[in-house]
Length: 315
Figure (cartoon, rainbow, N blue to C red):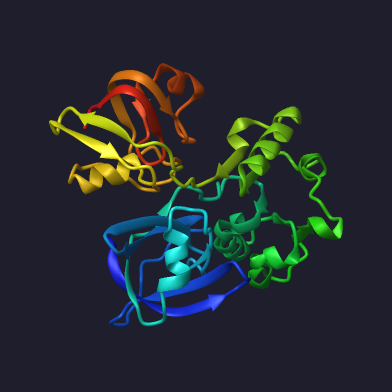
């Protein structure tokens, strides 16, 4: 399925800040199935700005009657989540992309340990259905500051392998206790705040977990910053990236072809060669290595910015 118009069939508040949206085919029929951990990109025509945000699919991967996402409202963000919460209603038509999976469970694993923080529970909701259906051993640990912020609690199955850790109730997740003593062949998956992802990775490293058994997902929003100019060599133009605009969005506005999948610094699809750099690239992605970032010969236009005199890209 390429991007297509889908009808908003349901809008359901899950907490004061998180709302579930269900999309269905306006003409009826079924949508392509997906695997646990997949996401879709939702296009939002917000005045003169076309916003595109990636959201994890939380519905049953084998239910083609519709797609469901959960969106946390971020009033200090760039406007996408606010648009979903304030402008989208049942019956509206929005363009939704085909499912893409950058966070699928490794089905070779002997066991799956899922660790979620806050809205990071979303990719695991579909994964739980998939792992349960396949009868694969797993355990889920869901962390939140309070039950009011734990919007995913109402969506989780009542299973002994599912554990909620609510900080203001004195039940903070002990990462070391969770990871220590897991059977050989276990894989761990983390989604949530950067601090949680780093804590799980650091603990796993100290416990000598193999890197191939560690998985994480963190879609990033392009951070704001000072406006900057970029020369696109192949296109023969110079564009200006606004303070609340990503380089990728500025390219699209200028009708320059720039491939993408996640728009959040995770997939590597929009990686672009840097031909000239007089200044400093502000790397915000999870794709390039530290050495590649230091070399300043590549940039991820979806989330990275620039400060300096000249940045010329191979686009």
